[in-house]
Structures are given as C-alpha cells and as structure tokens.
Amino acid sequence: MKPNKDILKGWKLLIVEDEPDNLDVIGRILNHFGATIETATDGKEGLAALERFTPDVIISDISMPVMDGWEFCYTVQNTPAIAHIPLIALTAHAMLGDRERALAAGFSGYITKPITPGTFITQLLEHLQMHPSFKDRFHSSASQA
Image (cartoon, rainbow, N blue to C red):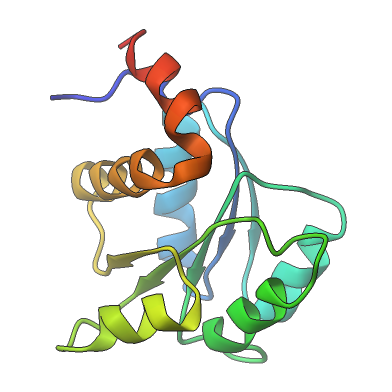
C-alpha cells in the first residue's frame, strides 16, 4: 500500500546524520510526505537543534563524528525536557545483535542503511504506528489515506 502524500503533514522530525547525501535523501523523502524537518550533522548539533526545535521524532545515525548516536541518545534520554521524544536509529550496523543493542540503549526503532525512498518511509511509518504516543494520531492520519 502506497502511503498518502500528506501522511506526515503536521509532523516535526529532527534528522541527525553526518553523511550529506543521506541527509539530503531523507529530507526530500520526509518533505515529500509533508513533514517539517530540522537537520544536524552530529549529536552535538542535534542537541543544539533541540534547544530551538521540538520534534515529534528524532532519527539519528549511530556512527558520527564529534558526538555519536550512542552518546546523543544517552544525553536525550537523560534530559527531562526532551527525554519523551522517540529516537529511531539510522545505521549501517546491520550485524546480528546490532538492533537489540540499539533498542537496549534507548532507541525506540531501528532502520538500516542504505536507504531507498520506498523502504525508508515504510519502515519509518511502521515504527511510528507502533509507538504508543502516536497510535491515535496515526490512526486519524491513516484513515484519511
């Protein structure tokens, strides 16, 4: 089933990714589906972005310079004002146990690279639909599809 073009209208997402091409592709995909996005190229920039932008969801790479995704996730989880924001790991780490490690570290979802527009949006929507704080919101969006 192809997602409605406005399925993410009204959603705000922070994308933390050090690879410019991935950041561009993800931004284009999310914009296409109606999301408002902010971007950062490492965890430190991500934390600075969170001071001026409160997203519904954060998608973060794990392997980044300056502050990696593990430290970024830990910092977000231990900052009361933003600890409630779900984090989805975006990573090339696809070995056995990597998903479990990311979930154990506090990420609420896990998407592997390389991404393609179709698989990325499908995986993202699956994670959002499963998250308890978005069930009602997503149900009303999905019913418009």
